[in-house]
Structures are given as structure tokens and as C-alpha cells.
Image 1 (spheres, helix red, strand yellow):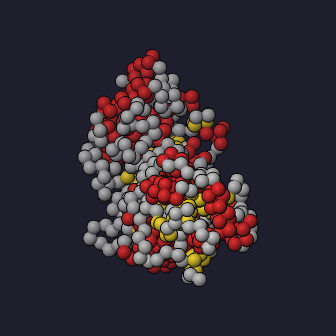
Image 2 (cartoon, helix red, strand yellow; image 1 turned 60 degrees about the vertical axis):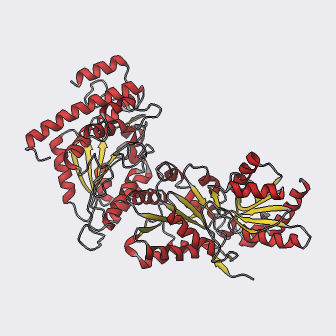
Image 3 (cartoon, one colour; image 1 turned 120 degrees about the vertical axis):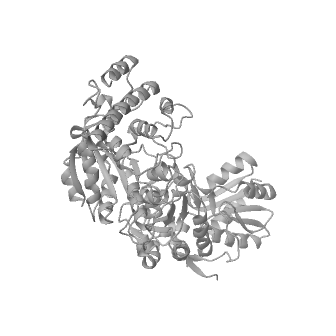
Length: 312
Length: 285
């Protein structure tokens, strides 16, 4: 069994380490600093840490002002309140002005668990990727998340970093390269390709193992950057394997699967199935119960692969 | 500028008249735009750019410059006219307002216009941005002294609209400016009393202003926003405020200077016809 770690915790560690190296890094938090792990930076660098209280719209624009003055602000809160609530501030100020704001959105997806639908962001990838100049990154595990923070700091312009609440298996290695905009192929196969992001990458790997026992060999891609999307890698695997399944903890409408479908349908049309949430809000429950209820398990991915193979 | 007070005021008055003419001309040529709230803010911007603000039009990104932000972005024409007169771009550029490919967008765009510090147009966001700039200024060390959050090497000015104060975010930001003791921040409220649908007190009253800002922890000064002496004194006063942000509530007249536009909310967001423009320019001679 792999190590279990929270991406939000790795992100908190990374921002603190980044703060040690770069005096221009500042952190804003809309309360919740203990939950988002922004407090680690706050304890080390109190002068560069701004708790903005429960006022997310104000926080995003304050981050914009700091960025316009040469700082590298990381604005942290739960994904629901980091995307939907301050969406227009992000659109009209941060993205329109191409300001160097890093939005740290923790507690995304159903795996938030018992807090229920109000706290489960299932639409944030769609909300963010539709905005021009925006970059959307969804790390697959804690190692990915740590690297993503450093990559985001290097990257000029706004970045939305989507993280999760629970501990999830570590599946990538410290030595794996992480480049914003470059998909990571973590398993090769010839029959179909599973493209997953975030927490679903592990389930995609599990599904690939299950399928290999039935002599079905699938490739698995960790699409940690939803935007800018890695068209080249997606098209290459679509052409090599002839079938694609996407898997994400997000609504089917507008999410990562939609983004992949946009690429495939315009460049190299092959059958595609999406493992995603269908036009529903979340609800209270334990994370793994919810993944089952919303058909986001490795079994569901296996079913989707078989379905897509029938359509080849 | 170190002119004696009388000649300073005379020169700023002449500049204000010229800026008003530019506003009318540019909106007429554009065929759309917001004259009312541009005309009300003329003296506020003229006193700032031609007297108070430390800036260099030849070097718009000079790191130690004072910043001015226009939160009521629909008043872009007054900002553009002032920036052109200050030398950020040629005056002729004003006649391209709102045209395809122009550096002068319908609402300010920081990526297109030299001197425009921040894009605006969506109301309620400016004060939060100004807070971020004021925080950054306090974090940056003044040359030769140790890092100190309480010292800043430049000041941030921001113009808010009165109707804009209906946006809840203005008050989120107002709370934060006081919480972080941003005494390098000076807000000016263009209190002209009108918004697009009518008088602010009839549409959704944000009044009383002085009591509200004071209750949010701000130092407050109320002035006549067309009296250049009062405006200059208020900017000087704001610099003396320590440990809290300062706001100048400037009582102004919407459409100031053009008799048929004054205090008429229907001139919030429409262009004058050629005939009306001619009449307006005659009044502004």
C-alpha cells in the first residue's frame, strides 16, 4: 500500500519552503488557515501573512493589488469559495490583468465528505478553465502538489491550484518531472487510454491493474494541468490506443473530461467515455461512500473502459 | 509643483477647464460613454496629477511612484484626459476612445493604457486592490532602513463612486484597510449623489457616508469636491493621518460645468449629440 498524504498539507509545506527562498511570496487566507494549511507559512512569516477574514471577494482583489506591486500572492480557501464566490473578481481583475495571483483551492470534489454539498466544489474546473489567461492545475498526490506550488510560483500569471481534503495514496515519485502544461504518462498500454486528474489518478491506476488481469492493457495519463491542455500527448495516445476514458471528481459538464473531449473531437476523434458526476450536487457521507454513490470508483472506470472498447 | 498658492490654483483651474472640454469631445466622438461621473471628478484628479501625486509619465512603471486607482471605471474619460495632459500619451489619442484597436477602452485596461494602474469597470473591486498595493508598499523596505511593515515609500490613492458604495465588497475592503492600519492609503469618494437609475438615496441609500466610514475605522474629511484649495488641503491632511486609512468625502455635482447635464442622472451614461456637444463646449470656454 502506498503512503497516504493530503495534497493540501503538501501544498502548505511547499508554500512555507517557498517563503524561505523567495521574500516576495505572500499568503492570504480567508479564515480557515488551519484547514487550508496556510497557517504553516503564517507562523514562519507573520509579516507576509494576511488573514483576510471571511471575505473571499476582497481577498482575491487584495491579492491582485499585491501581485501588481511585484509580490507573488497565494490566496487560500476552500475550492467552493475560491472559485464560485469570487469568480467575477478573478475574471475581471486577476485574469483580465494577467496578474500573478496563485489561487490555492483546497477541499475540492466529493471527497470533502461529511460537510456536504455546500462545501463540495464539483464545478470549479469548469468555472476556472473558461476564463482567458487562467491556468488550472490539479495535482494527483502530495508529491505532485509540492512540485505544483513551486511550478506555479515560477509560472507568470494566474494559476488555480485544485487540492483535496483527505489523505490520498502517493503514486508519483520525487524524481518525476512536473511541468505545467505537460501531461504525465504514468502507465503505457495499447488498448485504451485513461486520462485522470487529482484523486482519480490513483483509481485509474487501480482500474488499469484490474484490467490487465483480464488481458486489457490501458495507458494511464495524469493530466495535472487542465489548462493549458497538453493537446500533443492527448492526441498521441488517442491515436495509439483508439479509445479514451476520462476520470475526475467533478461534474461532466465543463470539466477535465470536457476539455479532453474538445481536444479529441477536433483533432483525432475516437470513442470517449467520461467517469464524472452527472448533473447532481454532492451530499454528506464519507468520501469513499460518496465515490461509490456517484460512480467514481475503480470499478466504474473498468466499466467505462469496457464500454469504450465496445465502441471502437 | 512649487508655485505660490494663487498661481497654482489658477493653473489647476485652467487645466480643469481643458480636461472638461476633452471629456465632452472624446465622448461625443466615441458616440457613447459616461459624461456625468467624469465631469464630477475633474478637480479631484487634476489636483492629484498636477500637484500631489509623485509620478513620472516618462517612466509609468517607476517602482516608487504613488499609485492612483479609478474604482469607478466608467469615469475612464476623466482619467484618460488627465493622463494625456500629464504626458502619458498624446492628446490626439483621446479621440480614439472606445474604437476598435484603441488603447483607450470603454473601461480602463491596465494592459493597454500607459498610466492605468489597474483595470476597472466592474464596481466595488478597487478598494480591495488598493489595499493590496498599500500592503505591498509597507512590506517593501524604504531604501536604507530595515524591513518594517509600518513604513512605506509611496502612497496609494483611490477614487470611489457613491453609487459604488452599494457593493458589499467596498465594505469588506474598508474593514481590511482599517484592520491593517493602511495609513499610506487615501480614498476619495466622488459624492455626486446620482447613479444611472436616479438619486442614490432613492435607488438604494448608502448614506450616511461620514458615519459609516468612521465606524469602519477610517479618518474622514468632508470637502467641496470642486474647490481646489479644499482638495489640496485634504490631500495634505490625509498624509498626516497615522495608524488608520483616510477618506476624503468630496461633495460634487454630477455633470459639473455643463448646465444641462448637472444633477441629471440621465447623463450618467450617454453621449451628447453634435448639437449638445457644441453647446456644452461653449459653456466650457
